[in-house]
Length: 424
Image 1 (cartoon, rainbow, N blue to C red):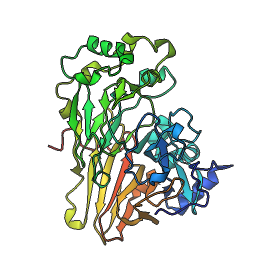
Image 2: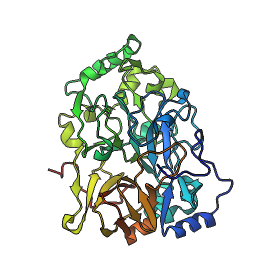
Image 3: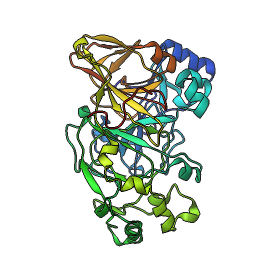
């Protein structure tokens, strides 16, 4: 079991601090030598069915109430608010933990000490930590949907969202009901085909999946998904580095017999376009969706950073590639053998979660929990600041099994990362 916080409750994830100032943020960062422990951040989705594989105790899956839906996501190093109906003002936000208590949100820390945490280049360009990652865990598939691009999202005061997937083997001992993901649209599909699907919305299944192809999901692999490309994620637990936004549009009307409300199609579109089917169809990146080489353009397999297995550790790229010519996020998986200590330098700040084993990261303990009660604190998640990452972080495996961690980075941090297809 995870370590329990004295402030934990079963109905609220965190307590907003009464006052946060720069001196407190600096105190916490200095105590961890540039590494800050984070509390688990749980997010429900009212329209999905939780897969119950991300370590949250079964009795707490509906801790926020059945009306909010089951908790099927855990967000990492997040400064992004979850766009859920009925959400609290801090839903989706990560809290920094110091001396066993939540002291402030990562968003508040970045607002006060931005360049120190995320690095000068990211702060100067974005004025925030513009990315986040999550575990996404569902019993079955979710609706065929897309995430808007920047221009589309800006019409409703938001930002677009490209994203990526990696399926951690440690969390995927079972694949649940449908470990396949539909991506894009089959070559030859016309806009009129999709228009007719939307016109059939209230007739049950609008048959949009007739125009798509499902790919079998394999633990230890992943995908890079640009904005405006349709996808219906399957039932593997997914680690998802992505842009710091929660916009989406569901284009499928019925999933496993459950109706999808029209409001989830149009929630992030201008109100005067909510019933403009031509507009809804034109929101899709048509060339991207009907790409005849879709898998070659988006599929990822891990690539070792270097040949270090004989030294007792292996660092692998698990998310890489560019979206519309830009590297917006990337991620690595580090495996350290029992008894091994290694210093890992990186180009910039990152959020990290342990998925197997125990050990240390810098001065802080790392322990992968078996089960987490809602509101409890854990020792499996941290945020590593820009300077600490560049100086090199010491990882030590003090356990009897491999210590495995996943870490993701912000935009333009890893220009040396591979390109899609380089795993071949």
